Amino acid sequence: MMIPTKKYAKAAKIAPKGFDTANEFFEFVFNDKEIIWMGQNTNHLHKENQIRDAMLSCVESREYAKYPPPEGFPELKKLILKDLNLEDSDILITAGGTESLYLCMNDILEPHNNVITCDPGYLIIDNFASRFANEVRSVPIYSSENGYKLTPELVRANMDENTKIVVLIDPLNPLGSSYTEEEMKEFAEIAEENDIYLLHDITYKDFARKHFLAADYAPDHAITIYSFSKICGMAGLRIGSIIGASNIISSVRTILINDLGTNLIAQAGAIAALKSKDDWIKEVITTTRNNQKIIKEVVDEIPGAFIPVYPSEGNMLAIDLKGTGINPTEMVEYLLERKIFVRQGTYTSNRFGDNYFRVSFSIPEEQVRTFVKEFRKAIDFLRKN
Ligand SMILES: Cc1ncc(COP(=O)(O)O)c(C=O)c1O
Image 1 (cartoon, rainbow, N blue to C red):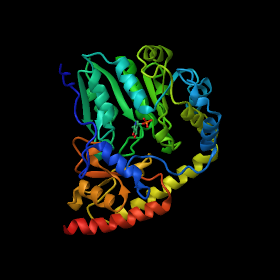
Image 2: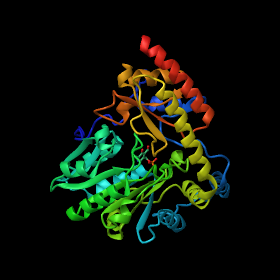
Image 3: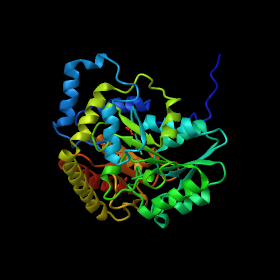
């Protein structure tokens, strides 16, 4: 018997040149320990700190032989809510923002609904939405006219009576754009007036200079997606959470997948990460922002290249190469051959992928200096070829 093709079935991950599958590619980059990791917005600036110690002692205790409490350790739940100042909200611990996003789409959407997202954006969100909704309205935002972000005006222009979720990735992967308080208030009004949900993905929140939570302005219409992958440097541990009003989270409880709970070692690390945040965050942010300046200086020297959103409020930015005549995919391949992993635009955009590539920079400064050197050479080489 054949399993019918899913309507959303499309390669969520594209295999780069020279690899049969995306997995093969990732194994290749993962196993080469010399590769400079600027391709996944991960954070490589944490040292031998409390996060690592907490996980090591969890391993030593061998407590991982037990299952954790299914919704997450209450201590961790409390710490996350305190971190966001959302103590009145409800929360579930998940295996990352990714699981939280899926649960949200699964729980809220009806087959006749549509979802508003933006392009560029984080495409797996569109994919998840398309599994449960009739339509995903991916609004083109790659323009200075709208500040390279989904504005309240664009949302109003694209919504109708079947719109159920507006996705706000804030700061936005890949561009680093972020929302002002005024914009957040307006989104909240839209959500309340129309009784729809703001899915606020705050994966990169702590890199932003200023940040406003949708949940503060529309507490009954906001769902917050939280991740330990980026600021806490814990991407490989796969841990995050989903936060919302108690009626929303109670509804999510009915469709959980991870019924036996989330990785216990990761939770130990996450607890330590939040408890020790004041000890490490300043250094992470200072290095990340300084690295961004180094990248900006070199891009400014290159005729035809520009950074659409500067400063980026995240730990990544896009470098637009359209005016140089260089294909971003060739740039990505060139850099990978020099052991620098960055991402082509097509990974985060269906429409504008040929304009830019994305680099992330929560990495040691000397690695950014290597990138800058190779990037300059790449421009000269690829312009001639
Ligand atoms: C906007 C956004 N949301 C969610 C995620 C995934 O987060 P997690 O590692 O917690 O699953 C990413 C990862 O890059 C992201 O860019």
